[in-house]
Each structure stands twice: as C-alpha cells, then as structure tokens.
Length: 276
Image (cartoon, rainbow, N blue to C red; front, side, top):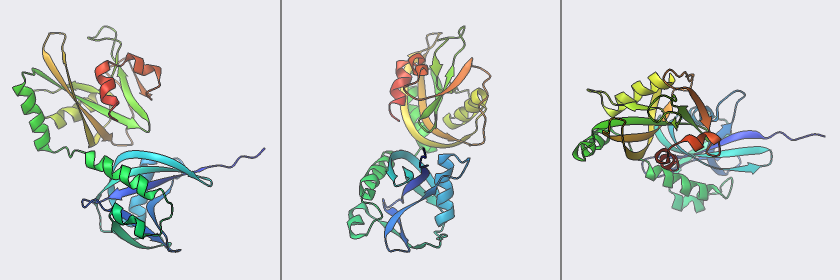
C-alpha cells in the first residue's frame, strides 16, 4: 500500500507599520502570500525567516502562529509576522511584483486562495495586540510595583517550541519544591528587568536571550520569608543553536498543555500560559 507524503510549507502574513499586508504576484497573474517549503532538518521557525530573506530580502518578526490548511499534498502553516527591516528585492523568478495592501482592498485582487482575507484579519489582530517592550515600558512596570509595596521582583521567560513550552522542575527540598515552573529568578540590585531575564535564562537553562515577543502580565505571591513578590512574565525568543542545560533544577520538559507536566504547574503560571 502506498501513501502520499505531505510537503510542509509556511505562509507568512507580513504587515508593515501602516497595517498593510505584503502580497506577491506570481507569473500566472495571481496574488499570494510570501512563503515556501520546509527544508530537510530545518525548524519551522527558521523556514519562516529564511523564506522572507530569500524571496524578498527582508527581516521579519514572528508574532503568532495562525491556523493551517491542506492543499493537495501540501500542509501549510500560517504565521502572523511584522516587517522589521530590509529593502525589498524579489529573488524568485516566478515572482513578478509586490504590493503592500490594506485588508479592505484585498477583494480587488485575484488571490491564490480565498482564505487570505480571513487569515490576514486574524494576523493583523494579533499584531495590534502586541505591546512593544521598550526600556521605558519596563521602567514603568518597576515604578508601579514600587508604589504598590512590592518588595521583591522575579522575572520569568515563556519559551515555546511549536506548541510546547519549556518547564523546569524545582528540587523537592526547595521552597515550593516539586512544582514545574517557568525559567525565572530574582532581579538583583543594580539590574533592570531585561538584564535580570538574560542572566537568569542563561544560569537556569544555558539558553541565550534573543528578543522579547510579548508581555504576558504579572502575578503576586508571598515568598518563604513572607515578602511581597511580583513576577513579570514575558514570551521571548531564544538563540536557536542553544542546548538546554539545567544547574538549579531537578529536571526539565518541553510540554504541551495536555502533558501531565502541567498538573504540577501553579494556577498563576497556568493563567499566564493561557494567554498564549
């Protein structure tokens, strides 16, 4: 019995600062989304960035993974992306033109597939929800915490690999021993939030911080010494060639929400992960 193999492809819904969608015109006259196939041994996130550079010479930021669809023998995964930089230079021979187009204007174009406006609306919605995490924004978080009597600051990183999240298991003899938690730790004297996050990430996981993706909010709790603690939580991107190595925890796991590892996560952390 023979089976057809699916080719995995990405579709990048890229928007600029004017909320315009990047469209490409192919050599048969239809307009579509920048994208391409997953190379052997390649991570899907790397495909998204590679195709943007190869096809148009642009750098983009992934905001959210959208839905997927099957077309013939292709399994297509859509991503909401934000244009970052680069002078557009079309590389593919079959691409003849490009345009930045408002969603309301898409009906004027002969599109490669009819679901483009639907995915485009979802992508733009995700981008509009994205808060730019500036140094001023981070300072304001600390200022508010101080005014509200917070005595200790903890920074935490949500790191995703597809649908999986990195969780670390605390040692049994530690405070809140045995729970699974996000890579996190105390902000030390003289540090700002970003510096603390970079340091804690490296110390706890051996991974290197690359970029903030989204601010996921806070929760407060009392420490073992009864201090008022506030944990700031951020979805981040890490450098891809890093290998997880733990030094302060018993174990680590990349877990989906259905994984039993989530039964050992606190309610506060679950609420943060439900925002993804």
